[in-house]
Length: 234
Image (cartoon, rainbow, N blue to C red):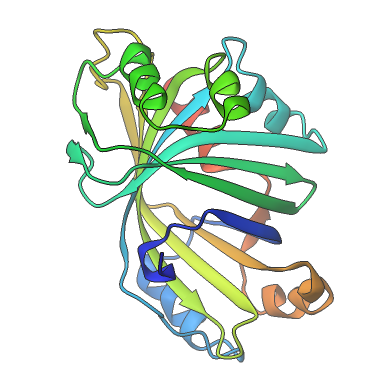
């Protein structure tokens, strides 16, 4: 499928640097991106990104990230556009990180309706109908719904094509307890927070320092999943 749709069956290893911006408004961040010497441009329009995150009963994925484990993973169901109602093309994604290097495997799922009451049983039915590889199905049987989040994402690519940037705003986090009566009521928004992510292939790591150094942003290890869990659970 085309990159403009955001779906890729397998993404090769790449570096990701994340920056938390709290003292600039989105328009100022975008201006800095567009004025960068790498000549970043928007390859396609912005859109809303929605994610249902899964974790073990002991929240192993969350605590691996908190403790800075060398190898860590995140599992989520992602879709674009409207948050509620019928989701035409959700995708199951497993992100695997080793230090700053990460890869992502994506598996298309069947359409599903997301509404209050969507819990672990509905998730397992969705998984069972997808024809996923046996190892993936086995892993998912040990996971449960934890968090629903949503943000508005703008996409940028350097003119030479070696670096990608995303700028995320309008972040909202919903607690997802997985129960049949899950109402997604407990939620928190971060209207003034901007998250910038710089992504590039491993061969471009030496040059990435100069690319990132242009921005007056603070690099952070905290992911949206970590932030969301801490906001709605603790």
